[in-house]
Structures are given as C-alpha cells and as structure tokens.
Amino acid sequence: MIQTLEGIVSEHPFFKGLDERYIKLVAGCAKNVRFDEGQIVFREGDAADQFYFIREGLVAVELMIPQRGFTTLQTVGEGDVLGWSWLMPPYRWRFGARTLQPTRALAFDGKCLRNKCEEDHDLGYELLKRFTFVVTERLEATRLQLLDLYGAPA
Amino acid sequence: MAPQLENSIATRAGADPMLPALYCIERLRHETDDTFTIELAPANGSSEFHFLSGQFNMIYVFGVGEVPISISSDPQNSKTFQHTTRVVGAVTRGMGHLKKGDTVGVRGPYGTHWPVEEAEGRDVIIVTGGIGLAPLRPALYHLMANREKYHKIVLLYGARTPEDILYRRELERWRSKFDLEIQVTVDRGTRGWRGNVGVVTTMIGRSPFDPSNAIAMACGPEVMMRFAVMEFERRGLSSDSIYLSMERNMKCAIGFCGHCQYGPAFICKEGPVFRFDRIEPIFGKAEI
Image (tube, rainbow over all chains, first blue to last red; front, top):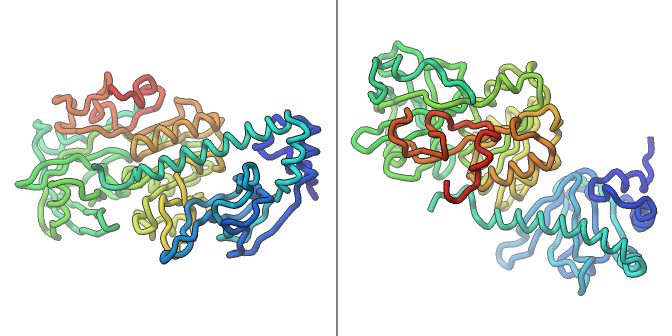
C-alpha cells in the first residue's frame, strides 16, 4: 500500500501530538528523496534550505579537517532528524552529511516552513519545541562523547 | 535479588572463603591495545568450575595482589573459564605478563547473576559500553544457547574507537545468525569505519523491543548506565525490568570488609547485578 506524505509525517514520532492542520502544512513542504551509498546529502557552508527525516539507511555528519580529511562526528539512522541549520541565520550548514548506506528520507523545504512559521507562530512554537528536544538530545550525547567514558580511568 | 550460586569457594576449597584455589593459565589473548583475556583451568586438573552469568572471581597474582574481575566466558563450559580485563593497575599489569602454565589464585564465583531465567518469553535488550561487554558475554552465550526461549534479543554496544571493540569476531558471528540484533557504535570514528558514531544510549530509543514485555540489562561506566536508565524509562520500561551491574572497590568479596558498601548493600554480596528498583533511591547520588 502506498503511504501518503501526510500519513508518513503524522506517524513520525517527531510530529506526535501536532494538530492535523499543521500536519497538512508540514507535509506540503515535504518530498521523498533517495540517496545512494556514499552520496553527499549536503556540504558544510552551503545554503541550509532543507532538513531530513531518515526513513531508512545511515548518514554520517562530518567535518573536513585539514590534513585529516573528512571526520565523522555522528551518524544518524532510521527515525532520526538530520539538520537544523535551516532554522537559524545565516541558514548555512555547519557540518556536511554523507550517506554510509543507501538511504531513504523525507526532505523538508526549510524556507517554505520558515515562512509558514512566521505566518503562524503557534506552528513555529510547536516546531521549535520539537527541534529543541532534538538539539538537547544531541548536546547531551556530545557531552557524553567528550567525557571519553571508556578510556582508562583517571 | 538474583540468588547466589551454591558453588562458592567455601564448598570448593574447604571452609575458608579467603583461601584461593590454584588455577593455571591455559591461554592469554590480547583483545585490544589495553585489554586481554586469560583462560584458566584448575591446577589439579580434576575439579570443575561452575558459575552463573554476571558473577565475578577474585584473582590473585602472586606477589602483586588480588582484584575482582567478572567472568567473561560461556557458563556451559565447566572445564575452563575466562576473564577479560583492562590494564588499570599493578595487578592487571602483572596478569598481562603471565604465560601459559603460570598459576594464579582464584576465589569465587561470587555475586548475583543476570536474570536470564526471568527474561524467558520476553524481549531482551542489552546495553553495554567499553569493557562492560565482558560481564555480559556469559549472558549472551546463555541467550544464544537457549535462543528459542526468548523473543527479540537486542545488543547495543558502545566502544571508544573501532580499534577498541571487544570480541569483534564473535560479534560478527552472532550478527550473521540473523536472530540477534546487534548495533555497535563508537565515540570516535576512524578512517575506514563505516558504522555508527555516537553514544550507545541514543540507540535505545529506536531499538526494536516491546517495552511492555522486555527485560533490560546494562553494564558499563556508571554515567552511561544513568543515561541508559533514562532512555529505558522513556521507552516505557518499568524499573523492575531493568538490571544493572554496579562496580565498587571490592576487597573480601564476601561481605566482611565493607569496602564495596553501596547504601544498604554490599556490591560483592547483594550485587554486582541489581534490579534497578532496589537501588533506584541511591542510584546516581554523589554521596553514595
């Protein structure tokens, strides 16, 4: 059975509890995308005009370090959100993203959503609440990574 | 609380629980840069060694000292047993220099075990990091040997780097059986690593287990376990379905000396494996 974009969006845990009219608005900014293994999803410094919900696959969030090459900071997989630079000026990717496996995702037009959020602050608040949760989770995880928990005890 | 095994040192080596029995090094294998596994067999060549998954032994390196180390081998094998440890001090450093045929003193097995019987008929989610995989390895052997008794089995394992992954070949073999979901992640990816990068606890949220009929086991750094518990609870697991292996400075291993006191419990006796609801009030408290 073919699932509609609205159906996919409404079932995603990220949008749990979001009013039906907002689901329609959000789905109106979404499209299905596919990436082959090793494909660039976005490059550091480019305009951040989209974000993604990974439906299947694995994506590396990476940073180019001179003389070290591309270094993976984190991977995101099924059910994860990829990208929030579209939310904040200057709307440029702080990191790059590249697929490690063939990946299916929902791509959301960030510009379209930003405009809708400006027009309807309730929608903006609902989306910001959800993205704040994702950002908080990533911050917690980053702090744990910095602790080097599995290293030799001090 | 999980029951202790009757076969303690008191029954194997006479009445004195502080008296170690002699065991020979059968094999010493380097797992990673700073971890190794020793395989031990009784020096007299006759007696058997029985233990339950999650229990530990006190290993005495003669002339150096004694340390508690979890047993990391298959509980079905009563001829030999293994310990995997990291080099963290004089005793483990000395242990790492032993050779086949050298002897060590062993007291044990001690402590409570993983709830492999309580987990029958349920999903099993195992979360571990670093050397914490070693105490859970016997439980994994048990689960694999009795696969039909369990629903989904999920292992989430976090290591520092790809080079620090323990039991890599075994993990690959288990994963290839297709009836065990294994996810490995590293804190720092290195060139050529194409797997997950990130903290192991973040994988709990998307793991395929049914929280209403699952049992969770976690072992690793205590901070990792704190975040694991938060994620288990967020998924809806009740605190009586979560088991943690706690670690403190164990000396006598029989509840005499009090070095490993953890609130009202001695970890050597009432632990190291605790059902979470029994330690919830003191878990993560800085004063404990």
